[in-house]
Length: 533
Image (cartoon, rainbow, N blue to C red; front, top):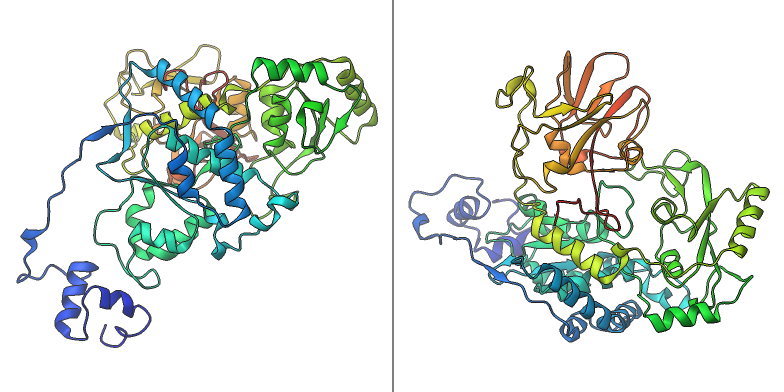
């Protein structure tokens, strides 16, 4: 402190009253960084006692004017987001009314304590991240990320939550209340937000601004959200596609041109076929085309694209294998709206085109990509997901005697299968998703939990990873690996995941059989189980 108090972090030290004296050093190291024990002569009893603030009843909003003011102007990207928010405002309002009618008997609570708002920091549009998107908005550049963030902002606003939106480091620093310095200055008060939504760039920026203080609050930040249902390892936030009324649907069917294929167009009502050529992966355009009465023709990847064999995924922390340009459309929509074929097989491709020319389809939009579906999903996340106070994991089976049976276990094996379900004579502890939705399935050798659960017409649920310690094995090891929990393919040896946050539904290895936490789901709303609402 004596040698460096006027160097790099000086604005921080000065902010907290350090003036170069040993007395100020001791006070700072004791009261601010807690590096030294409390000083006996300091009045610590005057520290305010915090009490839980009653939650405020949320009220749905239909006026997007206040949100448009927060988004602001000055960039083409922001103008694009404002236009989208304004254009879909009526659909959001109608969806909110329908959702309110369905949930009117349930008391919804606003996800904030007192006046604490939700922070949404869109890092990829900040100047500090390079913002390569804004200059290309009107030149055919990618718009998918802006679509998703515009819809996230609108959904949070319509649900009645208090938002703070930042598109720059200056705004972010002001909202966080971070003292001056380069991230070495700790926050001493309560974190000003109950929930934070950001992206990869935004998370790095928050880390830089908050420095050591981030560790204390990082569990409340949610950056693991995706536009598409990539894998269950991240929460599916999604986006919406515009819904057609009956007049628009009839107009499309009446005016649709046959024998026409469109790769990119501004008037979807004239499309017959929407063709994907393999990239970009999982964008919103195919869903918008299907919602406007198109048939989506896309390539099948053989072998599937993944980190070992494709440059786009190389170096990314995922074991995911992508079977087509838009796996969601392939697996959950399918024929007649989606045709997935090997473009290298001319006979298969020609047969698919002939089938498309004979097929008539109605506009189709999955519920989870409607305004109501996104509001329902996001509302459930905010009410039930808890990143700040996760439930304690179960004890290991060898150390727990709280379950009946010999050996003790809360699970029972289904007849003629390798599937475990929650025992009917055991009361499940509180959890979300509820443990009643969980089935444990032992995967075949070399298959991931994504594929294993799909084979059972279920979905992998990583939240249940912490509840999978009730396993009886001859030998047990607890390690950090994206392949665990698993069972050795050759020996009766079990491997459990030491770090639950690293559990991967997509991980697979030739020497292990994954123990997969599967769950049921609502048709058209995969993010939620049947008992999740």
